Length: 328
Image (cartoon, rainbow, N blue to C red; front, side, top):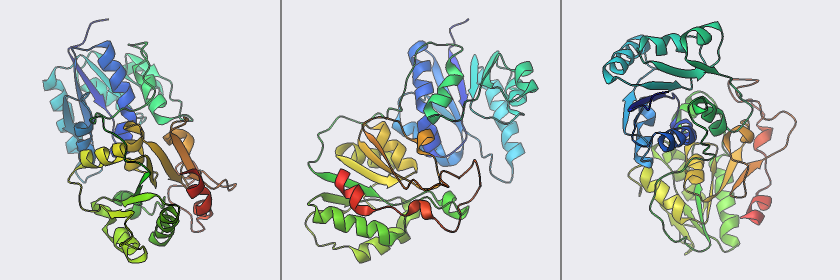
């Protein structure tokens, strides 16, 4: 096996998906410290490069746009011109092996998606979905390294935790809302949780992204914004790294199953993630710093495996707030 000078990785998804992919890149970097790593991703996720020193360059591929086939053609041309030595892809589509073959890269690794993967890949890795996603992605690099990196790590400066601090992020991605994928509470429930945390004497900060403006406005209408222990930090962050620094300073982060949750995990903050229709075993590490806020109703988790949109009942999001406050 050669020592690669340039490695290409493909992982298409949201910011959270890219953060979950970081352990695989970390092990590659430890195995090949002199290699340059380029990550091909969707344009909406390119800011992940600002969270880590593992990624030297990115190639944006708008695979969900109207010109997806033209985008893939451009990607193939860029990959061929890039003269990469190895390529790794997390895509499970049966056509991915052909895409990797067209790049002209000698060593190609991806999931075993059928006959084509065994023909066109150097090594087709078994796809084991029912586990923490970072571990699933990490399987891709096992043909070239025995190094194991368990959890994502985001490169933020060390800092002291603000005593008794709770950072609350109630939002989810815009794409989830558009697709009718409901993974979070109403603003009214988030406001009630904040009230209970303040009653307990916690220092609560409210934060959100550009897609969360309507939700944040409603929460602010319902909480006592004059409470000295409450801070409205919405609009104070300019980029994803600003949020990562806030999460790092906080003793606890409470959020939905979304990118902020994965950032909380990546900076090593105790993270309480809200799980309704999605599966916490696939998206949250099983360790002492991570807690899944969930309702153990019989029908969850259902999203992706059983259905593509959220059901109307949302029984899975009916959770006792007092029980959450008790463990914060």
